[in-house]
Image (cartoon, rainbow, N blue to C red; front, side, top):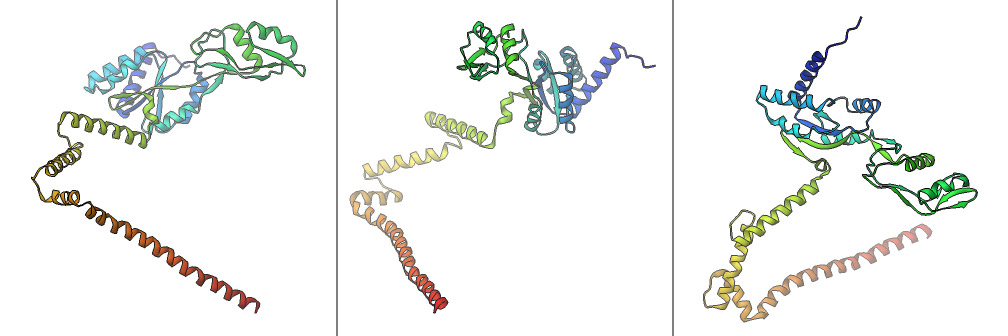
Length: 320
C-alpha cells in the first residue's frame, strides 16, 4: 500500500532539490508558464534533458528556500532571483548555452484557440479571402462589422479585419468567428522573462546579441569616451592619439605663422614658399603608379598575339 507523503515532507524534498540546483548551477532562465499544459511541459523537459533542469513551484516556497540557502551558505548571489519570482513562473537551471536553451524552449510553443475571457497576447487580424461558409452566415459577420460578399455560393471577406487588439479580452462573438474559420491565433509556451548568471540579471534580449553587435556597442562607447576627453581636455588612453595629433597641428600652425621652426616644420615651410616642390613630390608617386599600370597593359598586349599565334598554329596542325 502506497502512503501519501505529508505536506511537510513534500516541502522538505522540494527544499533539498532546489538547494542542490542552486549549488550545482550558476545560470538560470526565469520563464513565464501561463497557459502551459502538463503534456506540453513534459515535452519541454524531454527536449532539454541533459544540461538543463526545469523547476516549477510556488513562488513563496522558492523565495523562502533561496533566502534560507543564502543565509546558510553565505552565498548571496542567488538573492537576485527573488524579485523575479512574480506571477506564474518557473526556473530553468542550465550548464549549456543559454541561447540554445531559449531556442529549444521556443520550439515547443503550440497554437491555441481564442477562448472567451482570455487576454489577447497579440493582435488578431482576420485575412481577406474565401471563408468556405454558406451565405446563411452573412448576418454573423455583419454583427462584427466585417465586410463580406457572396462569391460562388460562399461568404468571402473583402478586406483584412483587426478583430482583437493586444491586451483586449476575447468576447464570445470573436471566439465563435475564429472557431468557425479554423483560426488558432494564440500560441503558448514557456517564455523567457529574465536571464540570470553568477548574480547578474539581464533582459532576454542579450541572448540575441552577436559579436558584431557587441563590437558596435564597444566602438560607440569608445567614441563617447574620446569625445568627452577631447571636450574636457582630460587625457585618456583612447584620446591620446587625437590629442597628440591636434598638438602637432597647432605647433605646425605656429611655425608657419612665425619665424619659429623645428625640423618637422621645415618641409611644410618649403612647400608653402614653393608649391611646385609639393607638386614634384606628389607627381613621381602618381607617375610610378601610372607607369606600372601602363607596363601591365603593354605586357597583356604583347602576350595576346603570342596566344593567337599558338592557336593558329594548333589549327593548322589539326587540318593541315
